[in-house]
Length: 405
Image (cartoon, rainbow, N blue to C red; front, side, top):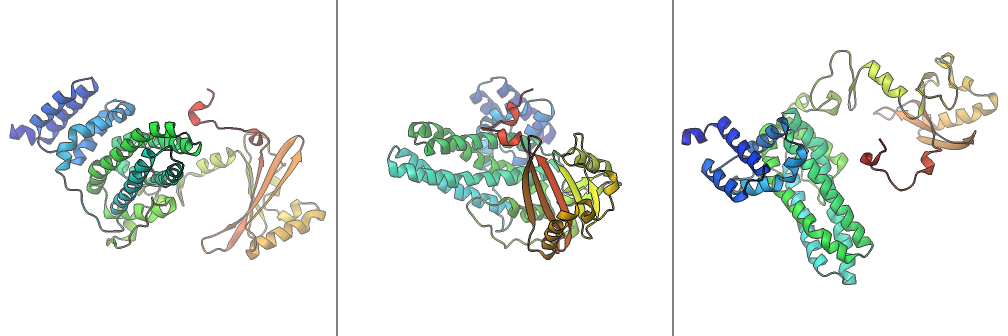
């Protein structure tokens, strides 16, 4: 039996069978009993691998997500025996855990306050605590945009897909709770809060006992540095991270967005950009499919490019203007306006100028942007022109899935 139990591959197969039986409606107590017979401990990585394998073999992510809490209930006894690695302040995992603690404290305060509704003072406090709790979205955004891509690079995508779905459910519940509190609908708030609180606490557990231990096993120090260095752009939930963690890694080892999907070098023939890489053909397709007209004038006031999209341009441009001084592209009476704008861009006293006009029944928005390099040196001007007639008529909202097919 011990030989069988120690066989990791066969254990994975048996664990997978347990989960599939659970999904088929088997009694959870029977599943737990079979699980205890099978093994006394299981690592967080094996749970992540198990969910990954189920998804790879065709089990819909939604089903895994729906029963994720049940998975945790089954594995909880084994997981409790695992020691979550204590990381140094500044390490992303330490930061994630500190944020969970802070959000958990706010959740407790909100729970106490919700129980006091419909008291008016409690209602006002609940609004404040709910707004603070909404900061947890920054944790989810960093997981989705920094941690998950690197896990996927190592072949771990199943748990990421499941968690992302739960993130969205929590976001919707938080939004509904805040709306109910703002409208003073205390009965609705009391109805929404319990499942929301449970979902957030379950996510804390899954992160700290499954996701983070898995990530610590598969990601390198250089990859954790990449996560840390890019986290500031998204922000943190209710805390400021420490700065003690300073691993000795070579700069070349650190994945950078310029390298594409976190660490892969740009293939031959593709141009490395600040966030990814594209072929010249892809760049041209991107520019010609923009829903705006763009024109680029370099630092010497020479017209270097204009987009020619699928639809007719708002203002006529011909290939003959390429290489021409931008001043020569305007009537003499308006050249002084062009020069004044360019002088302000070059001197650094202005970065953006915008205008709007009505023309042939259309509302046209025109913007000029000064382009500067990393040292702040002026490198040219970008003109962006857009017909916003229909945009100005929009009301309410349309979600992506609400789009008419």
